[in-house]
Length: 248
Length: 348
Ligand SMILES: Nc1ncnc2c1ncn2[C@@H]1O[C@H](COP(=O)(O)OP(=O)(O)O)[C@@H](O)[C@H]1O
Ligand SMILES: [Mg+2]
Image: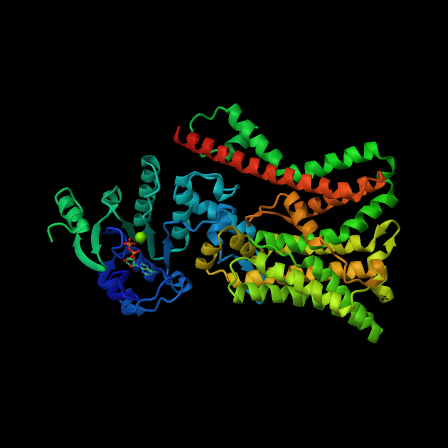
């Protein structure tokens, strides 16, 4: 099976600091890939390169086996890759629908410059409500996102990514700021996206509940990939030692 | 009632029985959000009861005329403040645009050219503010527009040699000082611009970008919104609004005055803040900014009618600004409580 997304020989430097050092990575449709590693391992750097926030120095990105170039967030989004950043990148002053469509508003007529097109407000509200319902994210979609609880805000950010990601959803530390109950909801959401056939990359710096939903785990350390395994009770200890760098 | 509560709930919030404390929070939030309009309504009521002349058509016309420039500057300032910025140069721009118009009128007796010169001056100042702020990567527009407050006022005084330049085309005089019955023409200018501002902020893509940039500039950038262009547009529009304010002022006094619009930037900021906009950006609307402008206008007018010294007017407006800001703080607190209450209901 051709992976939906593949990274080959990714390298990224920040001056003298090595961010990525020859990383290979593949993720398939309907699969959850956990990207693990201690702080500074290069996880965020890698997903920033996939989401267009950074550009690789060397190496390449393939989708469905074809080489693609991702230089801006818009490039990534056009390829069907959506990212849920750790800070969520929500607009607390806006309603869920406005958050969903920020920067890609449904508007017309097309012959006008984008900035002065008329918003299709009803269409955006209805589509957003449908997506939230489909993913079972329950909230008041009339009010500003800033009025929601932490878990609901995460839900909005994930649902936004899911609504527009035709292929890949990347989540950076999606449960790091949440309590047990709210984490559970986000994990359920991840499973629902997997059922829809999306490829998911979930970043985590620790062996947390993200592992419950992961089909495969890639461990990074100091910009390199140091291991790739299937998470299970047997491999648990091995993954932990790969993350912290013990035994090597 | 039961239906309304349900819509606010998370669907799974089990205890569907209305929680009186939650209701109370919702109600106080609603009141605080309606705050600016309520304050103006109460103010108008009190003034009309204590001052019989207030509600005569002639005086209402006066209020409109006196408030027009504050309202115009306030509309521009609203856009700037929603974008997380501030424009301190608008008062000076009122002066410079009027002076430039008066100088043009000394040389050519063309109404169109004078009007274009006045509006063009406002636009140019706004464009300069926006470009210096965005391209110069200045951390905050306060500094940029503080500098232009000074530079633009200086230019106006220099160009006018420190004194009034008399004479404006008839059309400008009528627009600034004339009226249809008791309704001044400037009222229609304000109304027209307000309608455009409502369309721009609520119905156009640009408006969504504006609120997104004000709410989270970083996320706006990541979402592909042209943040720099949005910011420049906001200062251009504020400058243009100040130019229109300059046009009205010049018409009203039939001259270009280098001291016109003194402290008007503070009035416009006060109007926006009284109108409940967040100084931190991302929140505020056209209707409330106008309410803020008219709150200032009514206070001035009422104190004038009672022959109260102008010193007290300044103090009274300052107090209202403080009340409005405090109301906003309380609103933020209540919103937090609502959020907590909701989260608890969700987990119940
Ligand atoms: N913009 C940057 N400038 C300089 N160094 C950076 C930058 N971003 C990341 N790094 C460095 O690259 C390495 C990998 O960082 P990062 O990808 O954020 O790790 P992780 O997300 O796994 O904690 C670290 O040593 C970090 O200090
Ligand atoms: Mg990170």
